[in-house]
Image 1 (cartoon, protein in one colour):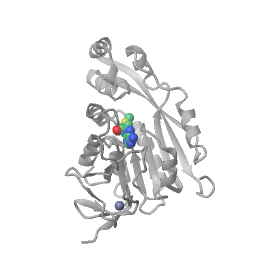
Image 2 (tube, rainbow, N blue to C red):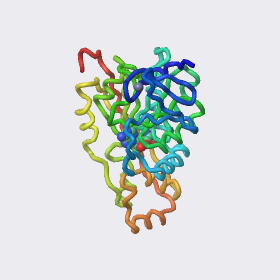
Image 3 (tube, rainbow, N blue to C red):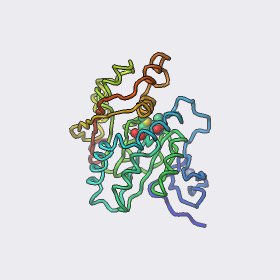
Image 4 (cartoon, rainbow, N blue to C red):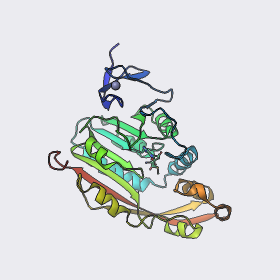
Length: 289
Ligand SMILES: C[S@@+](CC[C@H](N)C(=O)[O-])C[C@H]1O[C@@H](n2cnc3c(N)ncnc32)[C@H](O)[C@@H]1O
Ligand SMILES: [Zn+2]
């Protein structure tokens, strides 16, 4: 049986094209990777067990799934979708990769928005539970991979037309290797005042005010950075949704019993979601690499 190349995937061991043989993916050198029952594939190179703190825990993933499923972050997802749809409008069969995809909410909504336009979609996350959840809900749209953004990602050079990186770790040099000349890197991150009233009320950790400047410094030699877009909207949270949202916030693992009690006693809370969307274009490779 000959397999067909899963464009633009490469073998994480020898970097040759990875082909689809049904229940396994294989490269010409014979390295093979099983497709799990739920439809995702583990392409992590290392065999040692990762520490528990790498990637999101199953509890955080479930909380995010429940929260996002209620549509609270739809305005942000809509902004991302419009940007991506515009970017791929004249691109036949574009490759779109979401690095740090979590349980797959943003890719699922993007699939709906693309409404059947042929695309090669990939979700990547280091947390196996994340890609398992994403693949199960993906309804066969897209492929989901376990891989580490801090290592080499299993995609060919200059092969990704849109790379999404939403609230997830970044790897500037690797993103620059993957994104095509003229391709788009779209980042979303919390603004310094994201959920400010909620953070103040429950004494939760804040957001680095200089985060955007730091990101700009990381990417400035590799991409042409466009002006950041602020996306802000109010949230009205009942106790259950409040609890889910707080579990999504870094530091939620370390809440004191007093903080937990105060959150449990809160029936309704109003706050404001505040994000920054940053689009970056990859220039001609000979100029900025
Ligand atoms: C805050 S969550 C955001 C998830 C998703 N983008 C969303 O907004 O719903 C960050 C994600 O990055 C993943 N992550 C953390 N370290 C990673 C790594 N080294 N490589 C790939 N993904 C990683 C986590 O497992 C988690 O799913
Ligand atoms: Zn190989």
